[in-house]
Length: 181
Image (tube, rainbow, N blue to C red; front, side, top):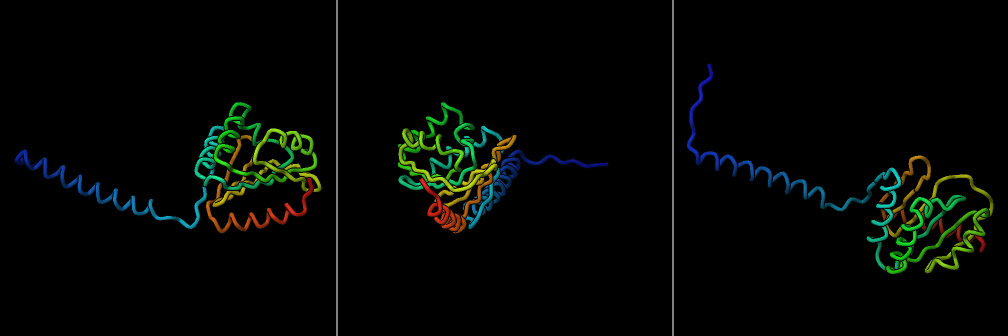
């Protein structure tokens, strides 16, 4: 047989207070872990909506007047995935924030890139010799590196690490020097 005994009603308040203090302690510990700046993070974004939201997030958090560089496959998958309306909005945000883009494309893209240069501000391109059949674009931001894979579904892998991003930017600069207008 179990025995139960009544406790004073004020005991309920002290139990609630104990639980509140324990929850505050756990929240403080989690906040400390969350607040620590990681040297490196890795995120995956899957699907067109996640891709778009991630691109906007990146554009909004990069410092104004920064530069983003991109090594792209043989298609304009980036703008096609955003869609016409979103592409225009994304470009307006980019220009308003003064974000410059340097873009390395493939020979098959030359006519489209020459046309894009006419309307895209703060944007320049070069053509890397040879061909590519890949569906991967590489975006190098000031503090991270993103691989966009335009398969079904669209996937973006982002590595946030300033040293890695700077290393890939050095690689980009080598390709830029080998590329032609």
